[in-house]
Image (tube, rainbow, N blue to C red; front, side, top):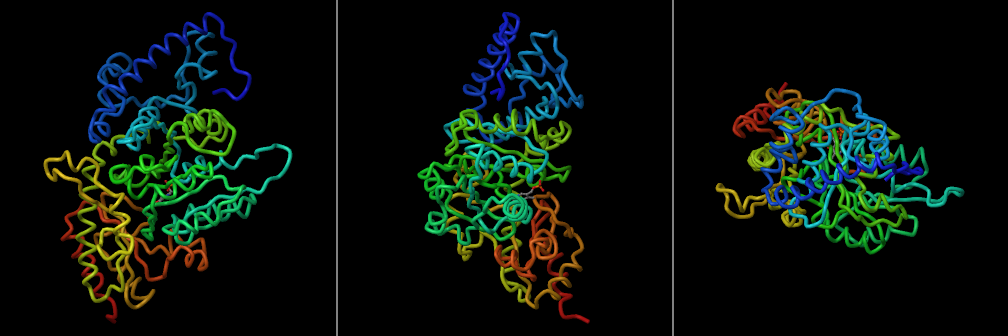
Amino acid sequence: MADDDGVQITPGVQRYVDTNNAYLAKRDKYIREVVKKWKFDTIAVHGLYSVNEAIEDYQGSIIEPVFMSSSQAYRDSDEMAAALGYLIPTWCYSRIANPSTYYYEWTLALLEGYGFDGETSCCSTSSGMAAIMTAVQPFLVLKRKDVFQPRNFLATAQCYGGTFQQFNVRLMEERNVECRWIQDPTNIDEWASKIDENTRFLYGELPSNPGQGFFDIKEVADLAHSHGLPLICDSTVATPALLRPISHGADIVVQSATKTLTSSGFGVCGAVIARKDLVTNLDIDALKKDFALYIKYLPNRDYGPNLHPMQAVMTLNDMRTLRSKVDLMSRNTEKVAEFLTKHPRIAGVQYLGLPDHPLHELASKYMWLVDAEHDDQYGKPINRYGHLMSFTVDGGEEATRTFFDHLERIWRATDLGRIKSVATIPAISTHQQQGEMGRELAGIPPNMVRLCVGGEHPDDTIADIDQALSYIGKK
Ligand SMILES: *Cc1c(COP(=O)(O)O)cnc(C)c1O
């Protein structure tokens, strides 16, 4: 893995390597023979942190360790040499690795890889934006170091406002890397027509925030692979409880773990999860073989966008109940969406779960509550569409603001995936920086409200919306 000359393997170094190889073999066997056979909920609750490991290494602590320490000490110079040469698992320095981020990474790798018959790995990041940056930058390197090469990538125009800025301003305007926006990601010909010999990757957000955009993952992954390119998906809105793009052919998933994965709202964090042996037209073996480990140990070591151990454990704690929370929030959202479709002051409702949504059928192909068929409550596969919806208010921007300002229990905030219901007006918040043109491209009208329904009883959420709507047109 080292990108320089590597360590000299003395007999002392070799002893540490042998001990640790034995540990790794045991760990991989445990993953293969035990953890991979668990259901989703069990993985979410335990991940790789076992009773044995707790007793041997962490004084029996039933919760994963949080070492706030900046670094790890070594027994002797041989162990240090082996560790810093990445020959043995180590957490050396918390910018690179740490026990808490280790367990966080494994839980996410296993959840995104649930039901996938290949291997996945994960690199934690300090935010969702850092996850996106970290996932795309390695594909934009120069292939020959001495000449400028035009580079481009494809991305769905309906995407998170921060992603739009990262691609449009940071990459396109500041670095001369062309982002070719996809207007209609369900049109495979549009994707195909925008690929050329300078394309490095395809990027898609689904369902998109806030517009509920969606596309056929398998179709787009197949297209990408036929050109030797990887497909990167932002799957923040769905979470692995509803959708696992890697099992449909995607190479990399980015998560703003800040959102539903940390539904309590404690902090900001992200993750990049990748399949091993991914597809790329770059000639970098370590990148292909284990992308997440590659970025963790090399580019991210040097750029430093890494996660704090305290945050890793807070998020792990929230992820343990992911499936049941996403189910509850999805069911509540469905009820609220149905209410809104019948309300005279609402011009339109966008929710993938509504049968008349143009992408309902496509989303239904992909979005399933994981393990519903193994659940007493359902006993069969069940579609769920998540907690994110948007709607437009009749009467334009003014009516929209009147409604918004009268919400009482629903929080006015630019946030989503919370156990508490949160609403925002994207045109004046998340999508404000990109200007009118950018909003038009992303399909964000000024009377759009994004609503993320939380865990409250839906009757109470509906009552709050109803009373706030009643102020429209009143003096
Ligand atoms: C919030 C969000 C991001 C950015 O994540 P941060 O953790 O806020 O940096 C990226 N993608 C989507 C879909 C998001 O909702």
